[in-house]
Image (cartoon, rainbow over all chains, first blue to last red; front, side):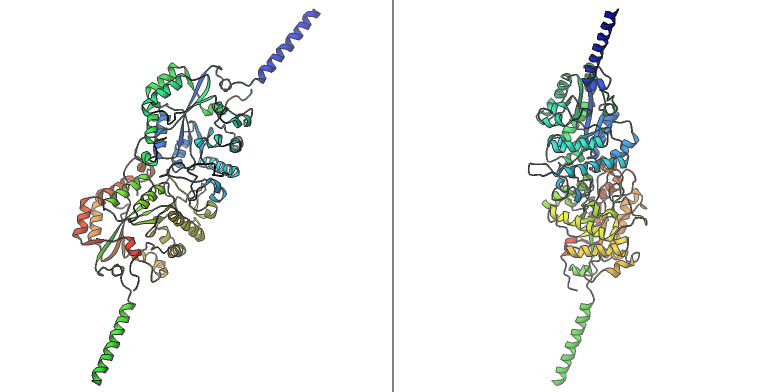
Length: 313
Length: 313
């Protein structure tokens, strides 16, 4: 009996140790969302809402038809109030804020939400956000924080309840540790997840080093780029979705109609232009895309689910 | 001979006196433009360029077809860079600046060119220009001056060479003597004529009292208003043009296409909306309008001619 008692004690100790070890291995994001770890989970996410009416109208159409299930909004842009109005009357839709520090077009431009005098390093000589950042562009991280907070504050003040944050042109992820720290600090302050994927860790090692235990990391991301010719558009997406790995993937797309407004807004270059965005719209609203998700046993998830996930790891 | 000499001296004195009196009577604006005083001179002027691509595209089309001969641009608006690009490559076109202190739409909005902290009285709680001014809106004239100068400075910095200034929604003319003084001071500083017509003197007596001898006063203005039903549009313009008085008249019109961008930008009300602006576009680009000008012996003049007029009175 004594021996049995001892064995039971040993067994319980071992079991407790195993449990402790298991608890110290962080759950995958899929598990935190209560899915099996080998699930293929997908966010179909449209960027750039607010920039033109055409982007807003096409993105709303895609959200309402179920073609996409998440999107993010550019607060400094002229059509922000239109999408605010829509977001307020559709509070269940998964809208984030597409934090914006550049004004990359030529014929339509925008500037800061913060008072210009407080964010001078972000502005060109005419008072718009810089068209682009070069090594000569000295961006002040403190001014970035002022501007990000101003964008988020305006969104809340006007009635948006964002589910997440991400970064227009990935500037906050790809410019260096300092700006990434600002983005994380702001995200923590507003208790919002900030889009980072482990796909970027190799190119930007500071991301992994800077992230905390409770920060969200999306496993993979897919986005099309200018190397894909228009006639290969559907093939690119089909192949990428068929090749999806287990875990959470964010598919980043850019929707608009190829109409006169969008053609004018983007006429200086074809990349992310009107025809590009119409191709995205056509593909993602097609029955073929929906069938592909079914065939590949892919489950759609949202940033709202991620924000509300079980964080006990 | 002595008598004759005396008579000649008297005659010369009288002639000199008559000439002095004649010189003290200011020449009419028509005469300053070297037209007979009974000429019917017309500026066909489109407002609001820069606010949307639709407004820009329709206004450019009307300028190029000869349907209109002058226009003014809203510097704070998102599509200002598009019209700057056009103005720079078409330096002979008669572009003024449509000084803007309100953001009167709901789904597309804009804010100041000056640093927000310097013009707080002009801004609503979200940082846009006020949607409207009520008696409760306390507008600081010093802040108005800062913002007007910022708009004009941005226009020059980006390459526009304006021929004149006018005021979006006539706020600078109709809000009181203080703001009108600011507008005049700014106009004098930049040596640009500012649109005022004597048609407004009765309702706003401070205009006439404030204007100096060398300030331009347009004799009359014509603009359509919401009391005119759509089916009476052409009749209104026909009758107004047939009833034109001698002197310089500015016909203020609002052009755009009735397209998806413009419908979305103005969908909260029909006044100055997409269909309104398409009706203006259709009328002013019609052969009927051109024929009417011929039939009525009306001569088109521009703000550039006014800016360059003989100012010796």
